[in-house]
Image (cartoon, rainbow, N blue to C red):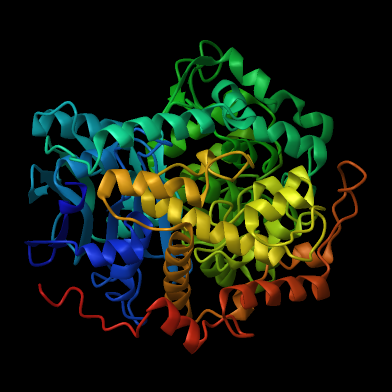
Amino acid sequence: MVLNRKLGIIDLNKNKVLVREIPVELRKKHLGGRGLNWYYLYNSIRPDIDPFSPENVLAIGAGLLTGFPALGAGRTQISTKNPMTGGVGDSNMGGAFGPQLRLAGFDHLLIVGKAEKPTYILVKDGGIEIRSAEHLWGLDTHTVQKAIREEVGDDRAESMVIGRAGENLVAFANVMNGIKNAGGRSGTGAVMGSKNLKAIVASGDIDLEVHDPEKLLDYSLEVDRRARNTKWAKTLGRLGTPLLYDVSYTTGFIGTLNWQYNTPGEDGKPLEAENLEKYSVKMVACIGCSVHCRHRVKIREGRYRGVVTEGPEYAAIGAFGTGVGVYDWEFVIKCNEMANRWGVDLISLGTTVAWAFELFQRGFITENDTGGLRLEWGNENAVLDLARMIVERQNIGNVLADGMLKASEKIGKESLYYANQTKGHPNLLTDERGIPSFALGIATSTRGADHLRSRPGIDLFQLPEETLEKIYGHRIVSDFTAYETKGIMVWWHELLYNVVDSLGICKFQTVFNSANSPRFEDYVPLIEYATGIRLTREELMEIGERNYTTERMFNVLNGFSRKDDYPPERYFREETKRGLPFMKGRKLDREKYEMMLEEYYRQHGWDENGVPKKETLERLGIAEPDYSMLEVL
């Protein structure tokens, strides 16, 4: 059955492995994936533990529905204490690792300790083995996966690996599966590197038996067809996420030259989504997904001739395009490919590079710091060289590699004003000054500035308020420049995306950028037909609330509070300089933002400092952490 997948506990220091059952009651409270990961970590990681300490725990989780043919259910969750923030570190990865982990007999892994020498973990047909990776250390993320498949003798084996960035403990290093699938945020790759863990490999043939196969197949086809037939999914399947760029730069909410501007204007036209088709070979997808939202691209001539990769996504256009003043698809493709080979979060890398460029512009850093490199806007060589310096920890790159908070302490605390981050976590290259709901979402996200924890993309559509009320169950103001009721909107999306991550399905096939996509009530039959667990829409929402509040409590115990729930100060002080009339001259209203934040806290049942109230914790069944989860070792 689906529910018989195991929990593997691995101590790299003791070279010891334990296999345990996952109680059904925990499934009913947390589902799997992100939710169950944070149940385990909340009860495992003490507040005084450093993210790079051997005592930090890395959790790997497949969603409850991962591996099933519905709604892109191929996702994997990687969770740990974040090296950049000291709080929640969490990444969601597509591809095929999660399904293969389940076929190997496991849904969750908890990894603690530090191996004496480079190591990889092999999860195969119900067993777990710790192997040497000394011969694999130093290999890029593409090469090492090929080498591992040859070594284990299984061309279907899936690996979750780190590259040079993780080995060098770059605070925003990621983990990779395939050539494109990235557990891309929160420094999960750096934590793997700190444990001398090069890879986790899954290989197996243990069938996923389901509760009601016929009903599951019929309903999966129905709900998948509904998601696939939305205008959003159809356009996504043709253009990929770069479709979002066209609206962003035209309207005026894409960070440009490190947020000095909110659009590049006509200069940005070469990066329109249609222009990527010149390089696109075909559209491909994660396992079990019918949307096919990513490009397979090839550069056939010129400076970057021969580069073949997947993507780039919308995030890369900002990170290596508008953010640094380069408006060339081939350059963006090359940077995307290099970041994936290095195993580094391209959002954090691009945002950090753009920040450094503005600091150079303003005199905070000079050529003495950069080894003679002039960080001038639009200079492709400077972007590539600085990115490489960060990954290899050379010159100023060694400072930037520690993340924005630590770097600003060395560069000068005034420099932090120009860093687009919250809680120390770099932001996607969007400009939220004119969209209060987006600003609140990046500020309150448990892992720091982020567009995938709560962003209500449909807020931009200004749908009829009766339609919004049907979706949210509350009156929501249609105007996306308004502050009123947006705290409720962000709260609802937090719960939805947590459930989605805990089920292992794709956010792009839920109410993210399409009001007609599946939501809570549509997941109820999927869960029952797959597992036999019967839940209501309201119970699913409560699970999302429980899981999210657990993450919030982890942050509270690590020193976070209301003071950390604000977007960059620049958003309050500086007006946007470009864009359409309704976006030009926008900045956040501090008084209205405070009102929106308080509305958000009330909706969650948290106090005025953003701390969950005692009655809220009791209602959700969240107890004090006992930190005994790993004492069995």
